[in-house]
Length: 267
Image (cartoon, rainbow, N blue to C red; front, side, top):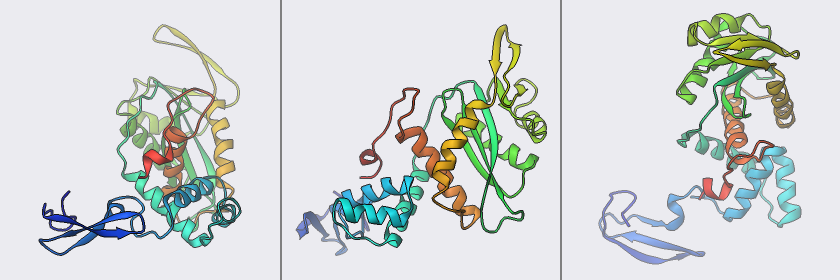
């Protein structure tokens, strides 16, 4: 083991803090423990309490999460502590490197969300998914225009590391110009809302509508209700990216995919 401050190998055991082994560097005098390098550094509550609070808070508010901890495992953190834990978890997820294999058919849609500081009455959440229901990109913008559509398609192209073969959207005109700017003319852009459109592409027959992403929007609404609006565009982006990671990696879905436990994400 190396010292966390001077990277020296002159590290010796130095007693215990609760059940955690402490260490001391003979070179610089720095003291640290096994927990100093983990997600739970400088938290006085046990790991399982913090993990449970984070999982509860993904589905319900911070106050209800604190109430559930009190009723289930008899720990009494404040709702402010729960908020700080879930925010730290969201920032932690944003730093993780992750790759996914997305399909070649993408769906894009936008929905209204409340965010303080937006120029309009509402801000706009843009979402791109593939035909396996995996979320490729999310973006929060202040206006419902071509810039917001272009930004989310650029993020999707960057995250997937490839353009799609087919892009399905509703009737918003901004998608037409944004698709041409980001993907060029090789990507087939289909405008279909609830009624499926029939078409041929590269010798294959397709019948596609935007119902798949509309179904996802209903799940986003259930999660979004607990916020009663976001405090800013920046925090809205943070929470939406966290939920995208949770939906792709942790949440079980009808279409089978490999899930990851929160125990593997924060250690």
